[in-house]
Image (cartoon, rainbow, N blue to C red; front, side, top):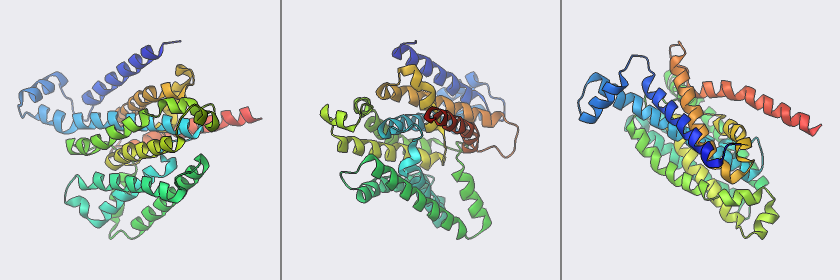
Length: 330
């Protein structure tokens, strides 16, 4: 078996290769070396503008969003001790999506490109606060899941209501396309507005690694080992709200990444939840970058939405996972 350090190195190398592929692949040929050189010299050539304004922010966001979804998925599965858990289970993705949709509907999105992601991040933080208000300070894992289901249902209903009340079909179509998830037409403004909340969320989620190892032995054992589970829950919910909320706010809803990658990597880390976190984050970044390269290689116009591609990949995986657990239960 590959050592943990060796596995992280392999995953980092794969992620770097796919990041380079994301920079190189597009609808028009681009001399990546010349474009990079022009950009570093500050020359405003067409190649440099395409590289800096289109390719680079898209690749960076693919890296950030994928790492966030993979990390959050590993934490949620370890914390809830449920192999089918993923970042949307606590309602954060739905809440962030509704916040962004509300900004769309109100017309505020036209004032600045930063208002849309800011609305999604704010809504995600409000969802985190609402979870604690609904479930209480001593909430159990089951209560947390039920509160998340309720918030997801409410967010879905409010999004449907917004679409129903959209002033014209073009506004509704724009909202629907955004909800499908995509990294196209993103700029460095989106990178900067999402980076801060994501990094803070990552730190909070990574700080739970030892607690997740203890929780794999049961909540009673974790308490005996000295872990404050209320604090762990706060770190998990807050970290998911910040990081996944920011990812959803800038890229829309990209499903299944947080569900798939922990299962693919878990056997390689000895099924230890704490060691899975960074490996799952890197795997999530690789999967998201690979899927985003694929949407540009598939000859369809308009471009397939990234969320559609990850759903096509993820749905069969979910069916196989359910079938596997069905056979185990027999």
